[in-house]
Length: 322
Image (tube, rainbow, N blue to C red; front, side):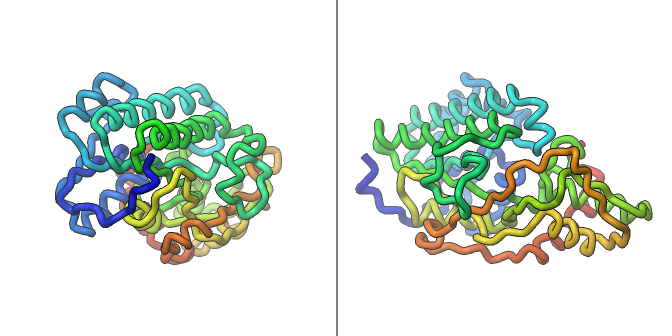
């Protein structure tokens, strides 16, 4: 078992493989590790290495021999994408996770961090959601396939700990945002979708913007640079079989976040709410006491995070995902 393992600072010259290094989370983790002096970071784009291809993944691990693995690769999307393509979200994520973890296990990778999502928790879990709420109720129907895949990833980590004694860990972030987010109309999560929608309205001089739902659901938002900082902190300070929630410990309504984004982008029109569209989970606030006990708290406040993210978006409109 990994009970005797004591986390220590990672060797800055060790080989660290960041799976999904071009995505929202993976790119932030890569930036963080570079800033912290890591000299041997490894990443492969999906064109270079299809993580759904089991033989290719095993060959990659046999060639690179990573000392540490951060599994941030995943097929992700918002309510529309998850509702429309549940088979893809289940199958693709299961294959990505299983292939990477099995290959890492074959190579005896000592330290692996698996990243999931707060959607693993029951739709009506008590708020704030503690890690113990896992598997205690029904999932939100709009993204249950994705959630099941991520739950399977947590179970995989725990199984490796039990069977092989390796100190692998899991972290479950709340809603993330920041540079390299997906701002596409069909594939984005709520915050980047709102930034794109309000920015376009401000530029076109539109008088109104229409959002899905009632605006009443409450959401917690964490800047991805904070998430990256938390990941390194957990790798160097935490060990245990239970997943660790990563968030700010506070939330706002979708209506409030929309109003703030409107201010940030300079939109002065009105906002309408299409109540025929689904709201999703009524509230999703994570209990971050385990993370706090491990010595980490979020640093980037929401307003500053939104301003910097909007600036990044406006500077990268030519190369955004469609």
